[in-house]
Amino acid sequence: MASLAIRRLFTAVPTLFIIITAAFFMMRAAPGGPFDSERALLPEIEANIKAAYDLDKPLVDQYFIYLKRVVRGDFGPSYKFKDFTVNELIATGFPTSLKLGGAAIILALALGVSLGTAAALRQNSLTDHVVMTAAMTGIAVPNFVMAPLMALIFGIYLKVLPVAGWEEGTIKDMVLPVIALTLPYTAYIARLTRGSMIEVLHTNYVRTARAKGLPERRIILRHALPAAILPVVSFLGPATAGIITGSVVIEQIFQAPGIGRYFVQGALNRDYTLVMGVVIFYAALIMLFNLIVDLVYALLDPRVRYK
Image (cartoon, rainbow, N blue to C red; front, top):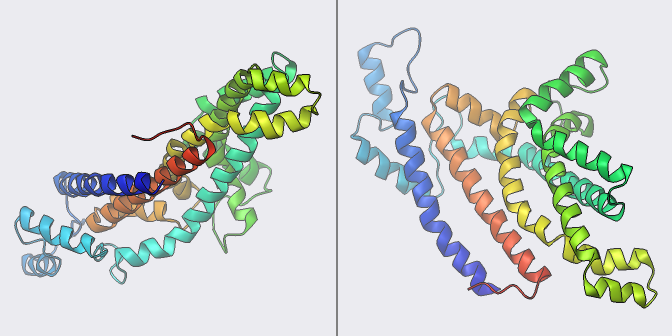
């Protein structure tokens, strides 16, 4: 287990290096600059600003200066939010993003496994058809389409939930963005659980448990479900990546003060350091969660051997 974690960490280093390099040169290749505006600056003022941020140096020199900062854990100053560093903005927005993303993952896992299990236990019944139809709908409709629809229905027409104006991050503020993030992944998990559970229910050890007269509830919870959720555990890695990237749009729609909202504002204002800082932070977060998923999978299934 320890060797697996060490190998994954060593693999993460070159991966992060590639991400940093690609993000840096892609941002510099984009048209415009962080100090472009409708009112042109005087050449002397623009030159002084660029010198203050090392933007007057050759591109390769800028890259190595930025790389040294990142190695020290410093993402540099923000060009748009001039009173803050990128580290401070990420630290400010991360609690909100963590609450939304964490709640979405937990809710998707709980609902998806429950609905998938219920559908598998009642295969080809009305329950099964309803759950699978709802799952297909959830997969087909992306969250950036579902979010405005939910805001329109529950916030504007029914006026039962807030759609913007995030105050203290109360449960009421979180309901719509969390549901919008959760729905597609609940649908995927429900489908995975159903298919895996149906397969497990036809295995010999489940038949043996039933032949011994064990209660059906005990068979499902202690014997079938632990084996059936293994594909779900594998899916948690990409699901987390999808929720993290999806939160960028959802936070902007519901005006939640998370990292995603800062990312959008940074991209619109060509704030190089802010955009790259968020990209690197999210990449490291996703790799860390994928490592945790791999370790959990190995613990749940002793047959797995990582080479």
